[in-house]
Length: 465
Image 1 (tube, rainbow, N blue to C red):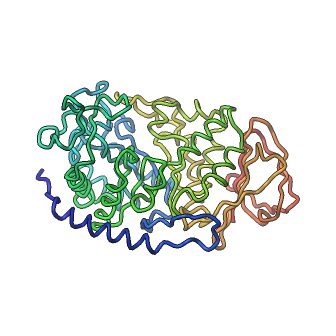
Image 2 (tube, rainbow, N blue to C red):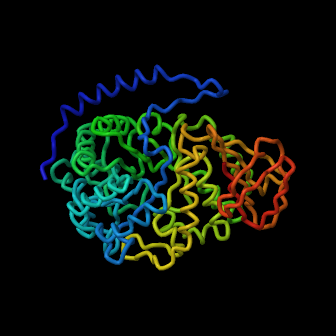
């Protein structure tokens, strides 16, 4: 396929983008109720993302066929479960030179605008995107901007796009064991033009709705700022950075990974920490860290964690559902990795075929309840559309994590026993009191200021109104 030359227009747009960013930055104001300096994100969130749930699709392992067409059969189930945004791991052809394993890593990109024949054809994927849109859901694809496969065409046509060592040889990304890929050089701004052109193709020609950007922190923030503005010139997009770096969310990305809270949950479940670590993250360190309006992506698994760190059961054990509830009710957007609703209990091979077993959707109702509440209760919406977390103190704050969130007429009161011991919980204050329905039992309950809750190990209660 012929690639469009955006070299000249890209540089013009870049200058306009910098003027725009300067103008917006000058207009940033301190929130009236804030006691710390905190930037307001200039990123525009698509309206459909305000109460969305994200679902990661590993096409290779999703079905026995491992194709787009086979995956499409699951769309009605995912829609019914309450999924809004489907994130597809890279759908591009995989490099053959220095390939790892039999099938290779999805993140070894041989052609940025091609389709991995393992998954189907370009037409198959375009039809799938259209099906997803017709069902009221949205599509983002994985984008690997930091490196390419050894046999990407640019190694022949544009070798100056790559970093080279003292001998003039291409090299894998620095300080990694990613031997199947080579490092791009973003000091060359012609690479910026080419990369953004490739990204625009997917938005313009395939009508996807955004990108999940692999190791986004390894690519200059200024590149992402410009890419975002050029993509917005095509249509509103949703941009997710695989990064926990606030500067990326000032002008480029809607969302970033909440790695800190994720690793905190792992440590607590393994007895290496207690609830004080959650208090520190949500009510101390996290304040003022990210631009206001940023979506933090909360998760208990993803493809990296599953394949390299262990399943949710390996890492969280009996606390799995407890931390799933936490991740769905704190501020931010929840990410579900494919197979979690079926109790995925194996580490999926990364370079080989290793399909998910869908015979028992044992946790689908559990996640459906959480996703339905997210969709309907404004207190749980994303970013500034949702309610702020307010800690509710208890008689055992090292084991019990309780909080409220409230927005307009909607409210949730969440109580989690984050310990392996039964607890009788008493609460301080009065903001939590009210008439609620408990999500999982569907029982109505009046909660007074002197209420006591008996909670089994790792028990959770989600009260809403």
